Image (tube, rainbow over all chains, first blue to last red; front, side, top):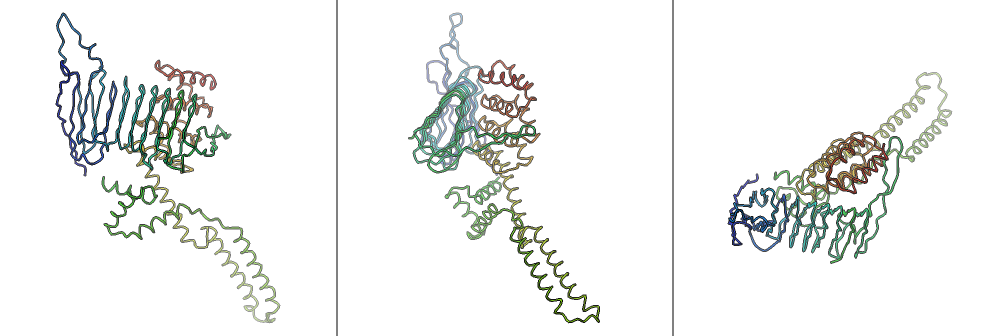
Length: 263
Length: 267
């Protein structure tokens, strides 16, 4: 049985500048901070930056991006912001779901989590996603912005449409498949030299460049049945392996290039 | 929940999908519940044997062996007849050797057919093996369907990849792949499900599922892949769906180009 625990997280409401509430901080206490957890967050508008650190609480700082523009002076009077940010968190064991209900405004988030945390992040509009020093499973979707991962141990499933993807892995989970896709952006991946992986790559209009010695795997034939006839063609992916066969890493983009680097 | 987890871990152990540490953990837990290490070992080896066993067909050698035996029998019977004393006095004594041979051959034939039908000389054992292989396939399917429901995209990617182990996927698997293609929260998993479905594009339900999903897709990579597939299949029924997508003003320009081309080619 899971003990469902709903903690109403305490808002400390740090006032960081001279005006009211342009940047606010939410502190989420974890009951079992030593165990791995998961953070889920979908930002309707704005960037997300997550950093793994040695602490035991989750620190969420939300900042309005366009402060000056929103500080309109009307009839010579200064406007006082009324709790511009609406941030809340639902905690279930070590699973934390963060929500931002601020509508229409761009809010950038800077989040600090314990290192052993898995992340499930989405930025729906007007933002980039950056992740540093995390051990865990990372899932990011950011259709319009870049995705940057650094000093990661574990695995990642990343997708963008108009943004670039860049990921540097310190270690990889030897059993996890990974997937990286973008439509318009370059994909740059850096892996430790000793990884074992089977790569499945395709860049429709771009190029694939690699530091690794990739052993090509023979292309397989694909059979398509059209009405009564069968059409045989070769698989359209570039398939190869780094060192010996390992989990499958799928890398695909349309207009950008793919870069594979050794760490 | 806990029991469910444990069952899954056990399955993964049998398939050898766990890391050495996790394996130790699961084995330790099993030992606590009274199952010895040897028993686990033998379970795993049985699983491997089932995976590696194919159904034996009655071989050519068996055919040959039967005919040589039949010939030998006939040869033995032929010289036997003149040797037998000419006791035509009794009806029974004349008829008995012939009957015996006939009965012998009939029995042999019956036995041979029985063996042939069940595929080997030990019909009982083989049937069990076939049943077991079926059960393992069933288990694998259940595992795939469970993994497709997991919140971790890595598990769902693994599940979609596992579908390619089947030559013929059953309806449930195909349905859930279409479900993933239409509703999965991650666009990468949707793209992968689409690639997995291509193998079954000759199945009418899959075709219809693919056409119906054109309007649901928002990821340009998935949209382009669908255009490519519909072109390869020469699927004219996709045209109205493509035209609906083309009405979307925020459509990616590369996708728009491809869609326009595809509509012209298919019409």
